[in-house]
Length: 286
Image (tube, rainbow, N blue to C red):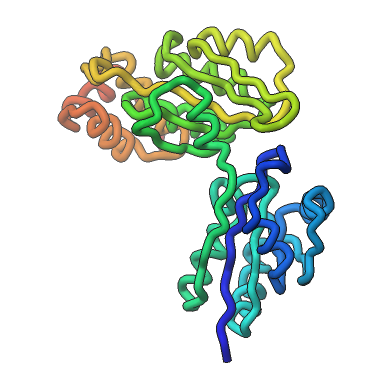
């Protein structure tokens, strides 16, 4: 029996003119096309004048766990399975990672038909350094977890790239400005490659005020400049205690929170521990 393969297909972010010849061939030739949104897939195929020859199935966050074994079984039986999301590369903050891991574990070949990327597109447009960057995807939805994650990134010197929902943008920019600096440069990239593409550049403070005043819509990619090396100097006592508290509020034990804050700032754990014990109110017994 000949094993099939898994093909990750990069789809246009919004402008169908960015579709590659390999995307067209993958959609036309796959035995199964697993799509994050089958309606968007059929719309894309129509715009590209491509006839999908295989079976179309939905593959999204809600059914990934159930559908992954079915797709792997089909590939093991010889089928070519193409995975396509609403835009960009599958598995990058989109469905696909679970399927890739399962395919590799089963010995199913995995390949890619590369396509547009919101990450690199936003980086190039931002005007911020692109030689070294890190992609953080979506920040946690819960406020405490989000503050803890942002606090952990405060001294990151590489340019940072985030995905964000428009209704959370103002709040996220406020948290970033508070933990990084209101003067940290950033760029909000909205509706990339689409008709109403917009790139708003400024400081985190300026962008936070703009997002609060404006009704921002569309898909957002946020690019934030990295920390200056000088910002690695020791924070004041109140800031250290606040960082430990943020980790605790996000569910981290006090011991682990102290260890992480000490590691991040290159301080002895005992120093941070003594500071927290001295300044924090006693915790009620559980």
